[in-house]
Image 1 (cartoon, rainbow, N blue to C red):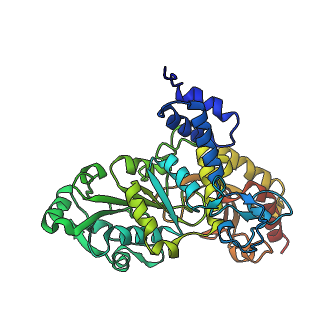
Image 2: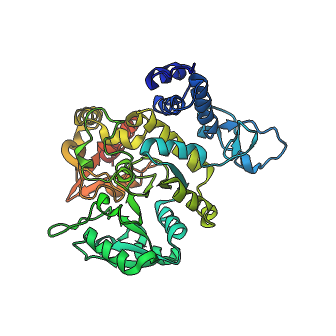
Length: 435
């Protein structure tokens, strides 16, 4: 008689007792185990152990090979792992379960898949590289259809037409600057047939086109027989923001998110790790397993892959999202979600230790997410204001303080200042009062 499968939640809670993984990942393993043919708890524990062992972690290199390629080559300092006094190798490309060479992508790919709903993922050194690699792997020598309104240039001279050219693909402009419909893509596909390899959607990131505009939804173009690649840029993982208590913040309204983009029909989504994710600079390619495999196997992958330090930092960020501790463990999300009351209290405490002769005072202001993400969005904030332009003097301090100037007023915005640096802000302001 076959063993009756337990509920996913019950099995996850049993297995989680002996695991250090975020509960969401244990649930993933429990779900896979319940779908198996039996020995559910043993299968779940094996899956959990497999993820734990795939994480990049410090190891003792006793092989006699000082710069061991599979162990991350040069040992990393203790600060990367949170222990003191020892520089160790890592399991960067070493399979701890099999004792053989492994992939540096395994752990982060599993985490990205869990957080976005993708089948697979691969990491490169920035999002421009992600777009380049996807186009080279999926469309070299063929056509890529792009709405004219999305054939854009963003930071650092990153122009979509030029990236397409470098990838070996050919640009096919579709629609008009302000209006593109699904029927425009349909006509282009009918005209060119199999020449069109993918439809590329590009989130403009740092500007808006307003007024008489139209762009088709992903659900409208994902059933035209051509793979859709969506570059969302900023890297919001999930529009529901499950790592935040309560509803998503208003400043994220309208920002595309990886999970929803894939659910709406995109075959591949690309995005940055150092923007709304709050992690290290890198590019993430996620989506259909067969298409991700083509990217991973492309010759450019070797040139574009990230270093071990980047993967370790990204792994920490992804684990924080999975554990729903992003708002305490990721500095960006801690800054972005701090309440106005907490910022005001910090500002008042700073002013209480500043020389009255400086005339500093508290001002309601707005902060910006920045880095080309959420264009036009602002976050209510609190700043300490000082009459006059003191920005150059603040930059010249032993620990430079970078403030902004509004007319003839210098503003130090508390939302972007770490709480631990409040005492440094006090010292910086008092230095202005004594010179």
